Every structure is written in C-alpha cells, then in structure tokens.
Amino acid sequence: MKCAKFSCPNPNCRSVFELKIKLHRHLRHCDMKPKFMCPYCDYMSKFKADTQRHIRAKHKKWCVYVIDIERNTVYNKGPITYPRKRFKKLAKFPCPNSNCRSAFGYKANLQKHLRYCCQKPRFKCPYCHYGSKRKTDIKRHIHSKHKNRYVYIIDIVRNVIC
Image (cartoon, rainbow, N blue to C red; front, side, top):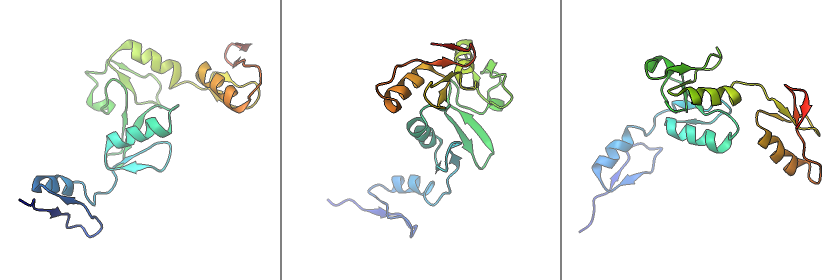
C-alpha cells in the first residue's frame, strides 16, 4: 500500500510529507519571516530555541539572550526564560544593572551572573590587548595565541599578577 504524499503549496518550498497533519504543522511556519534575532550578529530565525542554540554554538563567551523582532522584547536564557515583565512574581532576583534585563529565581544564580555577565573584563593577557571576565579564558588564549610563553594573568581590578 502506497502512502499519499502531501506537498507544500509554497513555490519557494520543496517539502513533502506523508501525513497531512505534518503538512498543516509545516504550513504554520513555512514562508514565515524570521522572528528572533541574535544580539551579536545578523543571524535570525523563526524559532527562539534555534537562536539560543546558535548563540551557545557561535558566541560561547557571551550571555545567551534573544531579541524578539515583532514584540521588541528581549528573552534571556537563565533559570527562567521569559521576558522580565511577564515573570516578576517568579523571578525574585532581577539584575540591578539598568542595561540588563536578566532575572533569576535563585539568588545564587544572580550572584554568578553579576560576577561575569554584567562586568567589564577583569583579567588581561600580558602579551596583547585581549581581556576577559574569566581567568580560564586568558589561560586558554595564551596557550593558543602565545605558545611557548609563560602563562600569567593580569588582574586589572586588583592591579596584580595572578
């Protein structure tokens, strides 16, 4: 017995489905303009999860948040992934930085966020202008960019060598 094939009617799409319900699900998103945008590059997607996955893969050292183009809203990727205004009751610990829209359900997560995401780079490479919020990033940088060099880090805040 042969299965019926259901083709997408969109001339720009070549998708074919064996089940009519899958075609209907596909039609909800086919030919839809991208709705979510990466804050670090020109990447855009129809789905928030795809944009978050892109940020984790391509912008590893940056905070994961997504811009909803249609609603002009920012979504952060923390313990709670809704816009701040929608979860004020759930997110008891908002970031005090006025430029940051992150909020957290646990104080420990806010404290971790404050140590890294909302700070200027604290550590500096002794051989070039590269800076980072984490010592491990500087060590990795020295091993890859300044091979056979002594590994030490400059702490800009304390003005000491680590």
